Image 1 (tube, rainbow over the protein chains, first blue to last red):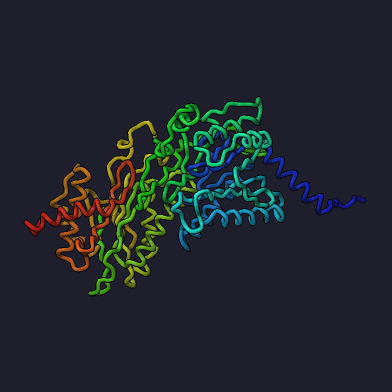
Image 2 (spheres, chains in turn blue, yellow):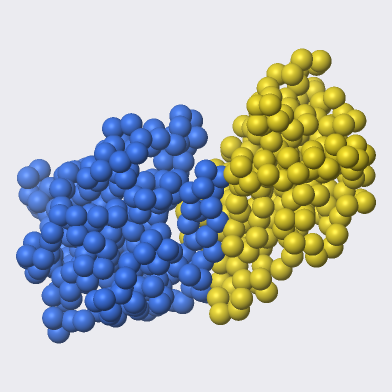
Length: 287
Length: 223
């Protein structure tokens, strides 16, 4: 007589958590931090086209680690949700807190109810205004939310580290973090922190291994900008590089000011998608 | 692309400073004629659609793609249009150099090429126009003025002046087109789209050109 398979609910949930945690720990890390000019996202990402960091709305950015197809789904759903809300009400009514809560609910439901939990960890960041911001925002009121695989949501104050082996990255970043640091300092510290983990650490990460973006609080309208190419290289290698806001814009991508004299972001100038072997999701599709 | 500021309800001026020309996205502009409420809503939705596509896909739509989407939206409004609530847009832009992986070493002016203009009918038919076009109640007069004023290869300043002259001529002959209101400083809305992007000219900038146009008309009313 075969014994019925039984696992206690605690065991069941613990196994699911283990499964999701292991999936996330296999990938590479992402750092999200505030700086004087906004919010900075730095992800170790060897693919130029499959992004871990993305724009959601005017002042809201998204970063994720784990299984690509799963967080890509969440990213798309988040953009759709934000666009619909902004259209139905007003653009200012789309907030990071609302979106983070929506993600927490979704991911939490999936964790409990689906056959397999999502192996993802998300960060939703909202940048505050430069003093003349919208309702409820002020300088220094940037918000970083971390949403875990089980739907738990944490409001981070200083920075978020997710994915891969995070302890060395957190240690490095805790040591170097300064509230209100400028972009080059923050970027170099984040890259150095990311280099403390992974094989053959400490590693010096090259621009081609990084995906960098900012939410620039000084810009009206859509604040999300990718930092690529020569701009990124310059910020990384030259300690004396003067930072002017123009330099944040990818020079290859055209900048079209919006009607209220803001700046429309250049969409990431992606070349043809190069299938990067590491990004193909095999059985354990980790990025 | 330039548009006047008058909205009418029969013989009444419903609004003196309505905006009819908008930046659609970084490299295109849209102007509307017809039922104001529906038109403004449609523009809002169109802009959102372009932005949405860009955020999801990571690259912008091609110019033809944008023009086609607009055609579909207009076609979707055919039922209402037949009942009198028509919307007729004018769409223009440049090909976006970052769309579909263009070689970014080539200068933008080579990639983007000349601007293109698309007009539409209420059935959603899309027609590519050349050199210049106008829509709206005063469009006949504006187009006639542009026929004489249009210069191929003119610089931006000359072209903007030509459009403001054309709007002046349209307002001169069509009651539903508003001329410049110098007392309240309400001037046409002007959006220019170049390789560097779409820019809405400030009131001051447009005011300078408009006042110059009006001063010219003081001496020669026919322009």
